[in-house]
Figure 1 (cartoon, rainbow, N blue to C red):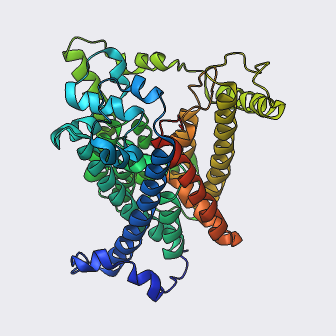
Figure 2 (tube, rainbow, N blue to C red; figure 1 turned 30 degrees about the horizontal axis):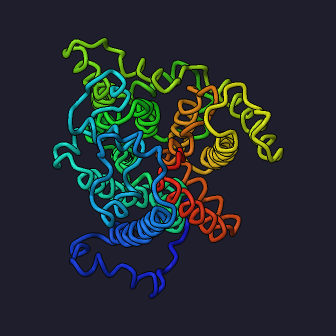
Length: 440
């Protein structure tokens, strides 16, 4: 049952001045007003943290030398001393790939690992770095609003407000305003969930299809949306004991022609693969392109095991206080840096598993299934030296994790400590990212 809504303090209400100033809330019902107010505050404050921390670290430490090697075309620099400071928190690493695709298209099979919707939209907005930042930030705002509405529908306004805040200040949330596809994918997946929850199946299918054209994991939305579709007819306790034939008859009554709208989800992936085929490339080129980053399918159990072993070796390396001997079978780069990455990745894995458990217990089944599927997918392609590489970044789009963390923190009275720890991580990782240190 939804929890009672806590009254908003005058101080927090006063922080909604940007929304009231432009009259955006006129004519909007109270539920959307709450979502907009909370989302504006979370967006502005979290992006302020990201830019102050990122630009500050870049000003103090300067960009690492590897930045020039990774971006020889200077797609993320060349804006002058002050301009480079401003774009630093938003354009590093994969941003180079997205900007290159927006500028020149899919030249080389290695680029096909990056799905087309995000760079296509960036190109439509002018193809510039500023266009990418604007798109990502706008998508983040939409995502935060939808998250609030969705969680308020399921668990009440208090958990909704906490979920939005935790997601905006998640340690890796700087990716949401960077030239990355994370915020767009998050907005589309939340939109698909929201429309499915409201039984607007054409919109749910279309948004899910767009998500599948944004990231390969978008296809995983099909299972939770199907669960939400079948959930429309509530099942009473005494129905559990009925015979199989009766259950099949119930299923037939639930399934109507509008279920076909869910076919739009694989349609998004099919459109991308078909476009590559029409341009003379093998259909499965995007999946083979993962080998460029030394990613191979080993399954989730292998990913968890390899990640655990790597984290243990990382702890041994750090506690040894020496870079020799190296405790990794496949060391890449500085042993201390690799060790730190493996330990951090394992910590994020444990946190995600705990949040998933809470999600399975507190939210409808579709949310827990989505979280499980996304996590299993993320850890099924381990890299030899860093099995859980990029897992912290992959987690930020799995929005049920934020909901589970918020619900747990409120129940245990730990929301403020959790938010403080998360914001501290956001400061640290934003600074590293802006200075061209590999984060996730």
